[in-house]
Image (cartoon, rainbow, N blue to C red):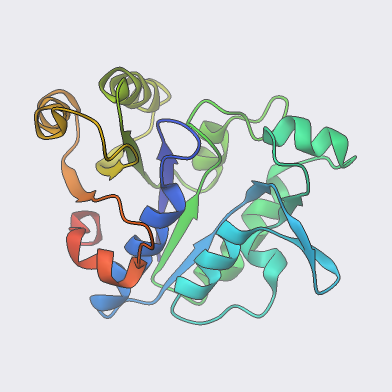
Length: 226
C-alpha cells in the first residue's frame, strides 16, 4: 500500500478536483485507490452527521464506495473557515490518532490512499499540528502540489515547494489547475513553473464550468505510481 498527500498553493485552487482525478487515474491502471479528507471545514448536516462535499467527492471517486463517512473524513467541522478556528467554534479537538486510524483502515483495503490536505501547505490542522506533522505520522508519503494557475502563482508555487522540502518531505510532482481562465501569458507562466519547480509537472487541468474527474484523469501522468 502507498499514499499520496495532496496539498495546494492556497485554498480554492482545485485540490479536490485533482485528488479525485488522481483517484480515477490510479483506478485506470488497475489499482485499488481510496480518498481521504482528514480535516474538512464547511460542512452541512446530512443523515444525522456533518458532511463535507469535498470528502463526499473523494468517497465517490474511490474504487469502493466506503460506507462509513467518518473514515473518509474523521473531523468534519461545520464552519467554513480555517480548520483551527472551525474546530474551536465546534468545541472539537483535532488530533492525529483518529486520522492515523482512519488512514490505516483505508490502507488495508487499497493499493493507494490519496489524502487531501486543507488549504495551503502551511495552514495548520490545529494548534501545534502542522500538515507536515501529519505527513510524517503517515510514513512520509510523497506530496503532490496543486498550483492554482493565476497571477501570482509562480511565487506561491515556489514558496510552497521550498517549504515542503524544507519540512523534510518529498515532492512527487505538481499539477496546474487553471482557476483564472482570463490569465494572460498562461503558457509562459506554466513554462516558468516547469523550469523553476523542483519536481515534474504531472498534468495541467483546464478551467471548465462542469469538470469531470473521470475524464480529466486522462490528462494526469501518475508517474509516482510506478
